[in-house]
Amino acid sequence: MTVFQKIIDREIPADIVHEDELCLAFRDINPRAPTHVLVIPKKPIASLDHLDDGDQALVGHLLLVVRDLARQLGLDNGYRLVANCGSDGGQEVAHLHFHLLGGRRLTWPPG
Ligand code: AMP
Image (cartoon, rainbow, N blue to C red):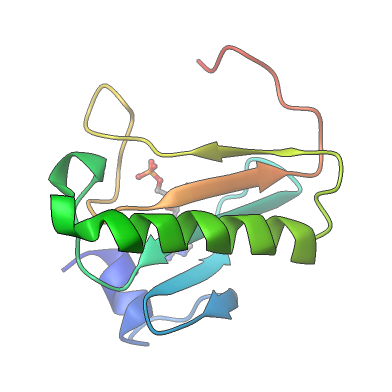
């Protein structure tokens, strides 16, 4: 079981900023920006690569939650959304998640 599943199941604590029937959003334990929130589906999907065609509405929901959270968290100057996928993508937790990063000017390209 992944650490994110344990957060969904309330087996370990997290600083939750949003929850609904389909997803959970909580602050990253090792923030890389002043605002760093992870948005995850409650459905156990390992990565972007593991999405089914039937997950289309779920993914759309996650992105709309990101839009609303960015407003709620005051990211008026912009933000970045990152989904690391697989080993070359630097994914460490095998449960689909979007990193919502903001609160400072972010550099490009990533490392
Ligand atoms: P990734 O490398 O894309 O798989 O990102 C995993 C992220 O999960 C990292 O940014 C970690 O800091 C974060 N993380 C790991 N454990 C926890 C936790 N218990 N609570 C919050 N964030 C976590």
